[in-house]
Image 1 (tube, rainbow, N blue to C red):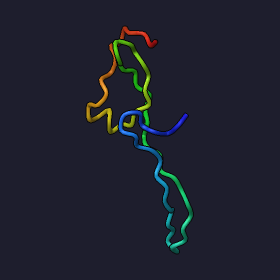
Image 2 (cartoon, helix red, strand yellow):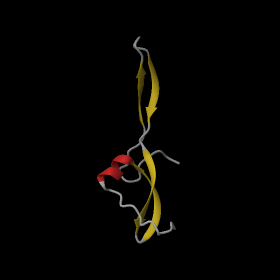
Image 3 (spheres, helix red, strand yellow):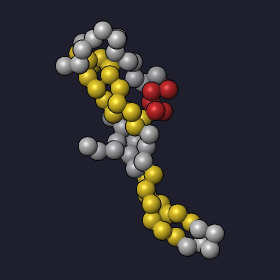
Image 4 (cartoon, rainbow, N blue to C red):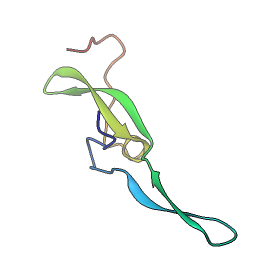
Length: 69
């Protein structure tokens, strides 16, 4: 399961932790991905979408009564 948004393609970013003594250790920042039920071509599917896409309205959530296919 990849940690990539299925709408915008946002993925992990690599960088450094920097301590007070300026020591640097590698680390990874992951996007805030949520599993969202949405309708695609008349079917209900589950997508892994970042919260920015959800808040921006790029994803329209499926109705409550619909069942995933």
